[in-house]
Image 1: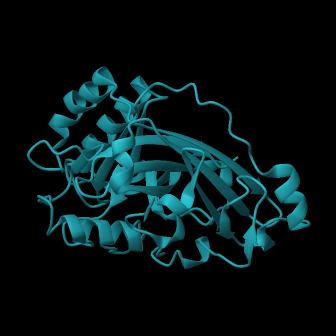
Image 2: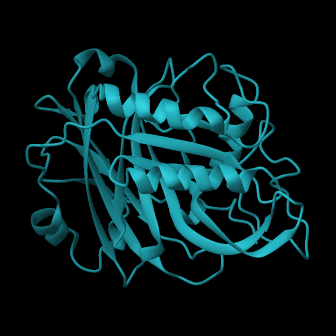
Image 3: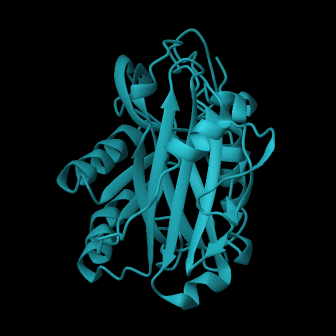
Length: 304
């Protein structure tokens, strides 16, 4: 089953103006809200308070494949780093290689029938396979896309690089988010506030939202070349909101009183095992420099 067709995830409809922040014009799917849109605007739109967060968080992008024998060890390491720092380190398992889809990501029934890829993950893999230092294969990962000679690092570099980010704690951009989810329509609205503590970051700042499936029991080739049909895949990258592989720039049009506001509407999909469970999914929201690719901050937003 392919999840490359995520177009149903992300939609926009009526052009509306919300009361908070009052100057921002939006394109949101108002049909997601099971009621009068004016009620949502007046009663459910989040109002952000002063953000007390002073920590810079880490996103580990683990580029992996279900037929890559060295990938389970890398995935275990990424999960262990998250478990040791659960409120500051997050993982996105991107099933892509330097050419987008390679043998490690390809579907080959009956043992490996699940397609873990999606259009945005494939595009990211294809881009970095040819540009900005690239990466040579799986498993490889990025730590806030910090360039340590190359953006993509082998797993034996992840721990030290993660510790360096956490220890330095150089917070340049703060993020807050609010989400309203409606079981009746299986749709949600995400509202994000971006606060550039370091004003120089705004010159080339962009925002990306990953949709992540928390866990799935499925097939994986192991280090001894055996087939494990009960492997727990974690933090599976399912696509990006608005189908934007590299997000969207943050501009003066988003600016109100020194902070930036970005909003999304989307439908939550079924899981890869075809069992609908929105509580088994979350979002990772991050801001980054479009010239250097460095990710300044990332936060996790639960859907339920």
